[in-house]
Image 1 (tube, helix red, strand yellow):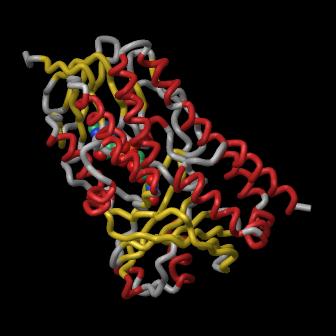
Image 2 (image 1 turned 120 degrees about the horizontal axis):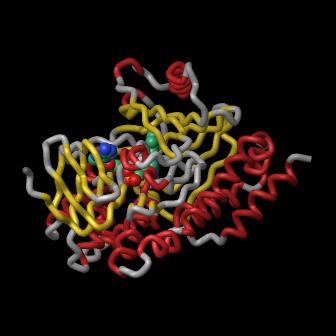
Image 3 (image 1 turned 180 degrees about the vertical axis):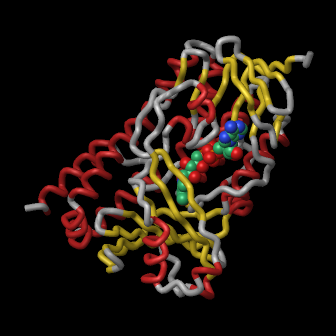
Length: 376
Ligand SMILES: Cc1cc2nc3c(=O)[nH]c(=O)nc-3n(C[C@H](O)[C@H](O)[C@H](O)COP(=O)(O)OP(=O)(O)OC[C@H]3O[C@@H](n4cnc5c(N)ncnc54)[C@H](O)[C@@H]3O)c2cc1C
């Protein structure tokens, strides 16, 4: 018989949400481990865009690192300008007050997990779970280990194994196709560009060191998604597309879920559907929810309720961004007219909501409502 390995908290998934949770738990000497099926450093399909608020949150979590330390360790590019395009036509462009850092996720995720390990955190990498007995709080792995726990943190991403094993409501998902195109094959600028393709797909171009990260997001399953993306790249003037690896990935769509389960499970990051599909942003939400899960466990009073309470703002924000997404798709042309007439309001939204997260929800509502003025 295998001996059981007990941890007060077991975190499944060592991405930003899982590492943030583990690091916070270690600060209070809490007994925890991270189980991941991958061996780090591992690849992760992602634009890698980090607004100022995310860098600040990283510095709060890795409390002995400065903003400069973090930027030096992970930054491969930066941008302070932004452009919005409708069907390849530039509609508005503006400079942002805040700086956007671009990182390689393989580097960022490894940096966070390494920090956790350096501070005494235990990991089981390359470990696949066979079964979870939620009632008796036991995890059985394919390499025949048996773990037991008090709290289980599901940080296992958009296709969460834990969510499936609990027969929870499945998340609606946005499907992305992306490429990293070398700058020799694509003459562009150091701007964060967003492309609205007739309200059907949202595309992006982010500078990434020697490359541009370029892709399209599909809200619905689309048989010809690959052809549409290739056409998009060709129209942009990308050369030698066939030389590049095409990557696909999912992000939770507008689904809002309760981030806990009565068996003592806390869902964080994409597993808890915290990311915002309109902006494609999820790293800040992953770090924040991971940190809140840890603080609720440390507090040890009504852990599940406390976690629900402390992540309420993330759900509110996602709800409002979901409404904005609906309006932008519905009022496509009018949204663009608004952009043309008042580009500075967009910059204010980008700086306020994405850059600093200082915008009040009421201003976001006012912003969405004002689209109506342009639909007449
Ligand atoms: C194309 C694309 C572009 C994006 N661009 C941005 C961007 O520019 N900026 C931004 O902020 N966000 C972006 N996002 C969103 C961001 O990538 C996610 O929100 C973020 O990675 C969520 O972090 P996480 O820790 O919840 O999950 P993940 O980072 O997905 O980590 C989950 C971990 O769980 C592990 N795991 C999964 N299943 C199991 C299992 N059964 N057993 C053990 N381990 C398991 C995985 O190996 C992985 O390490 C983008 C997403 C996509 C798809």
